[in-house]
Image 1 (cartoon, helix red, strand yellow):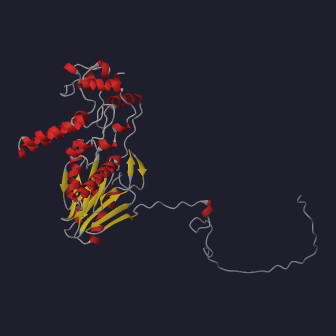
Image 2 (image 1 turned 120 degrees about the horizontal axis):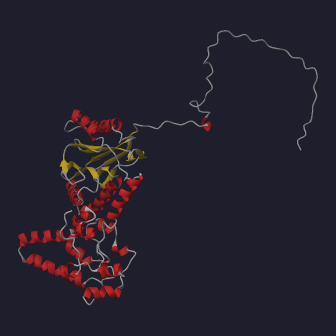
Image 3 (image 1 turned 180 degrees about the vertical axis):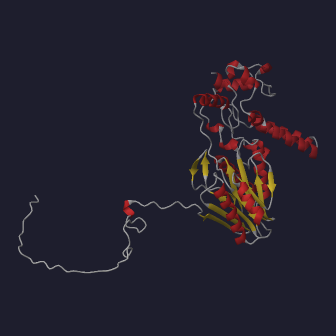
Length: 130
Length: 286
């Protein structure tokens, strides 16, 4: 069993955050449950990285820097509070994914999920107070 | 409390939460002797051919679930855009959803560019999506259409590789259909010859492969017209069952026709009967 990089627990200092994510099991942490799990988790990230590096090679360093600043503005400023679902319209327009439809729009839409996080806890977690 | 405050993923799409549980369930079920339900496949013969003015796509109409025929008349030629159609083999749900997704994407794209979509665009979108899922989406497709650059035909495999060819076949009956194509294909055929060739190829798949059967559907795409012929040929027509209500029909009538038995001689003897006595007896019908 070869452990897969990028699958280690996501809490601070690389240790599983039992308070928030529940109990751990060694097998759960070492191996993904499906070969596609890792590539799907990082798909958007990898696409962005690829696009930025292409943009850097074509137009120079300034282009990805300016775009990333706009991404940060769209993601951190324009979005709603963590427990509310935001439409991500600005982010979609920047990424050009407002004109395409994929499985993420059809399956498992977070706007239709049955559970909601506790608002106070989630805001405190996001602001780093907890 | 733990699950509520966890940072939930902000994106939708496939969720792999139940994969480990499913793997355990499968092992447990096989220990007991049952098996997990299998996905419905299309065990198919699909093919396409480029002729002088366009493309002819053909498909059979049987959907199988393991060894059982699940659907005797399913439609395997899916709409992608007004000038592009796609036949699908493999897992039925995968081909259906994939073609619908690509059809929506292509519609949005063509609205954005303001032009009729090209077959190469649909091909590129399909292969990028299928490669992203590394073959787990079991959709083997034959994509054909006519755009501003002429008629095009592509075959797309579940892992994401594509071929651009003048004639292609896919599915479990692809070898039988390809044999017919290799024998009789000629470049620049007329429409009727192309339709006959595709019909014969699908018929070869239907009669020689257990996974294909029932009728033959055709779709003829030319520059300005699409002719979706469903069914083009009912190669396997189900017989008519006779019930007592239809006993009047000649097919179910067990009486012989008048004149079945030849008459050799005929002698008629009238018998005169004398009326002796007549009496009326009333019946009590209260």
